[in-house]
Amino acid sequence: MTDTPTRADFDRYMVPNYAPQQRIPVRGEGSRLWDQDGREYVDFAGGIAVNSLGHCHPVLVDALKAQADKLWHLSNVYTNEPALKLARALTERTFADKVYLCSSGGEANEAALKLARRWAHDTHGENKHKIVSFRQSFHGRTFFTVSVGGQPKYSQGFGPVPGGIVHGEFNNLDSVRELIDADTCAVIVEPLQGEGGIVPATQAFLEGLRALCDEHQALLIFDEVQSGMGRPGTLFAYMRYGVTPDILTSAKSLGGGFPVGAMLTTDRIAPVFKLGTHGSTYGGNALGSAVALAALEYIDTPEVLEGVQRRHERFREHLDTLNSKHGVFQGVRGMGLLIGAQMAPEYEGRAKEILPLAIEEGVMALIAGPNVLRMAPSLVIPEADIDEGMARLDRAIARFVESA
Ligand SMILES: *Cc1c(COP(=O)(O)O)cnc(C)c1O
Image: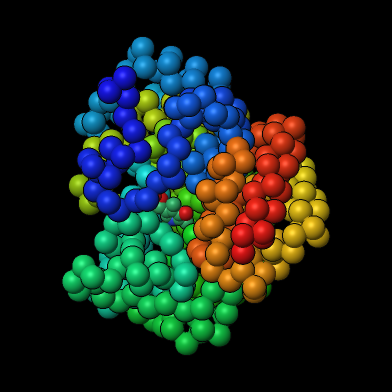
């Protein structure tokens, strides 16, 4: 008995940079999870937009097991078949000609930002190094990516930040016009801001960014770590907008739960990453690549992508019904299966309080900042699980409103 870990062990043995919920899930299947006591939950959190096919989807389990028996890792001194297949599949399905593989979203963005800096340095000279990013954006936790991200609380307190980074206002093109100039090497943006509160870019904003980048010979980077891989109802969000970036980053749903990231770019830009300019020991390892390839081939089909849109509507209907009863939200937004419900003014800053109540009622959800309840479930969540999870969320919110 004493061998079974408890939540208290977290506080005892782990660096206190997280505050996980009290319950410890031990098993998952599809969109359901079970904790140490055998209690069952509907999963609307999806490991923060990661478990794109739910838990232990047979297609991913089979890919993982088959590869586990063959070959795990070689280093980049050798290449491997799964990585080559994944890179080919990603280029065939997107604007990209070339792919760099890594193990997380932060690493994919680190690579994207270094590539943009290097490209500008090699083609235009030293001065072209400025990066335009946006307030409330999130691009990862490496020191470069937190510095580029638009949430100062994540980058402050670590000493001097890298220079040449400026932040405009998301969905405000004028703010970009004031910042962009001949020294700008890149504009980095999430087509759908995730951590910043599930805020989709407007069509005019992304089109305007594309035009401004072209005018100033800067690269347009789309961070689709959260918004991509089927979640918007298309393979990537840029496809919905019809605005093509120069560099795109993917992770989260790409591996369906296995740590994988990718940076996609074009033949115009890729060559500046010459031999030795950048790298990662685990990037493109056979195991991760095999799982990501299986996820990509499964997700990028009309059945799954149309299913995402259908499920989006079902979530919306439930949220509208729930809200007409309880009046906790002032609006619902998002795309596909990345959905945010903004708290009404009287519940300002209190989205977080819903989560433990939801867990007690048997449903797992997320927040995106203090004012938004977020849902990022499996792209193939059964409709019955949506209904059941929403019934549980309804009870949790009734309790939240009572106690408020
Ligand atoms: C989660 C996230 C990242 C960071 O990904 P990690 O895998 O945690 O490094 C970067 N960008 C966006 C938009 C994200 O949502």
